[in-house]
Amino acid sequence: MSIQRQWTDTGHREKVQPGIDQIPEFDPRTGDHLWVVCVAYRVDPKQFTSADPSVLPVLDHENRLTITAPGCYYCEELYSPRLATRRCRGD
Image (cartoon, rainbow, N blue to C red; front, side, top):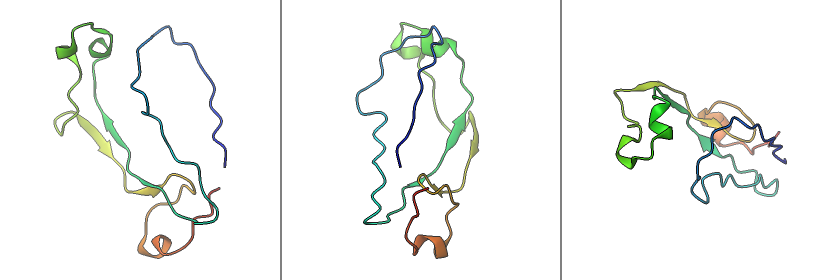
């Protein structure tokens, strides 16, 4: 499964650390799931545009908005003990 990405210019530029988006390609030979948990935090956009590194956002329980149950990145199914023992379809 190939991931298609499209660039959208927002006018905001920031140097991103190398390797921040290293999602492994799905391997149909193994059928391994890639279990992920998504977390959303409340942040102030000014914290991302400041030149002062001490103004970076704090991602902790006090500003956490939501956390999702584990799910497979490839097949987009929620975790269950039954699904964990089955091969991932990857689609």
